Image 1 (cartoon, rainbow, N blue to C red):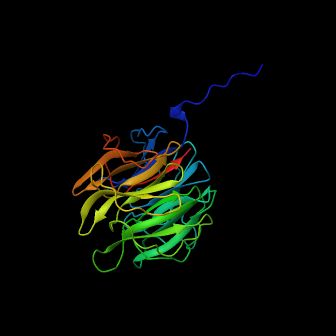
Image 2: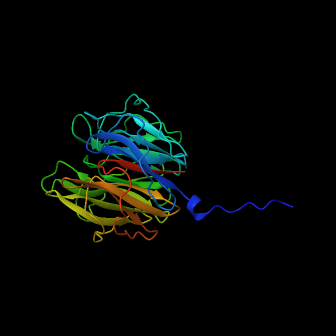
Image 3: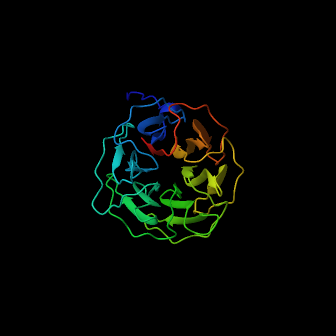
Length: 306
């Protein structure tokens, strides 16, 4: 007779997430794990160089990576996240990867990732860097689309593709955009797709529903905090604005968790920083604020793991 193996509980199944790094009231490297049920844990002591406005994405099916960001200047170092949610010490920047702050990151192609856009030593850029299924950052790929910084959003959609959207650019007022750029399952970034929704910057995005995505929160010109969201279909089409739910804020982080749900967390509104979170259902509905756990901060990043 074969032994009966108990099924995993709902709390133990599905992806988990991690919020990490940020500014409060100085740069930090603390992290907060997110369970597969969307429960945020208290602070884990920081590992690696404290910094803010960095990018993060999943790679290799069950692991994650933080990259780039700002200390006193832009950097290009990375920190791997194990399949147990443990953040590793700094990995030096690969040769040919330019330093920058305010990029975004997402996964693509089932087990790889991409980080792109942001502010480099010259200004707003569309440069991207691929992340291998072993967590190795590649040297720069020449930018495609409108160069922009101040943290555009990025997320996976369609099961194996990604999308970058929104961000601050050098155009005339409103000085920010709602254009998007799709990422193929081979990591190739497409030219701009015409803007949909309210232009804004310092927003984020995450996937939900297994094959869709959502952009949310951010700043509109001239610096108005927002909780607007825009859904992304499973073919990468960005929808018009959905009225905001929860505290309007910018410099938030977001990640998938569980099998098909997401979470927005932390951020700022004027002089206040928050640790509140907002869950995203498997049909893309954003919930009202959940009381914050961990250190309130802004300019952090998040990714899934496990």
